[in-house]
Length: 251
Image 1 (cartoon, rainbow, N blue to C red):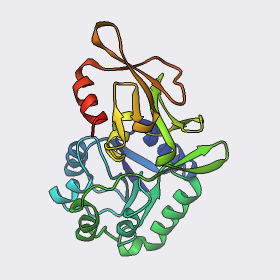
Image 2: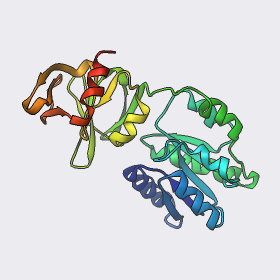
Image 3: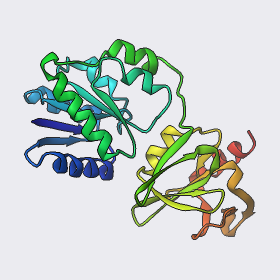
Image 4: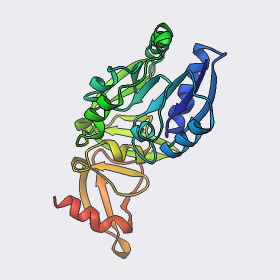
């Protein structure tokens, strides 16, 4: 079986690749593509793969732009960070959807479903997908699925104090003080959570309004923040974001 992975999160793509190799060591992963543009270029120059694993939010646009630019004949298993309204869309004429973080058992079930339907060469119903997603106002994530050891936990976004990046790993800090690694970059998180409730103050921190305990005017006019729960690192607002940050605080 020949397949491609369209995914802009490198760690997620690597993890999916590992699970596919575990499922079938003879599966050929022809390419891992992080953007709409690169996906279109690859698909135009190569034979269609037997199966496509496709994230919704890519680094340059929604994946549906791919279908608008070329007729994709390959069946698709969608991967998504959402677990609410998209479910309706992904159950219509696509093979399946996988909710991040991807579960191995759900992955194998989706591939088995693809094999059983292979003779029908099912294609995604793009008109229906666009009706639910492409033409709608954005709906932000209300919860995250987190893998802790062998357990999967669902954490409401309202219970998250802030996210931070340290040594190329992104962590979620809950209001109760739990510090949990999460399979999203801060760039990706900024796109999928409500900007009215969360603000990206610098390269390392994405904060909820509720987590900000105190704001100080620091050396050279910088803003320093005390967070609750207390952060392991000192927290400053980037100089180029101070004006927007103050406006956000006042909304």
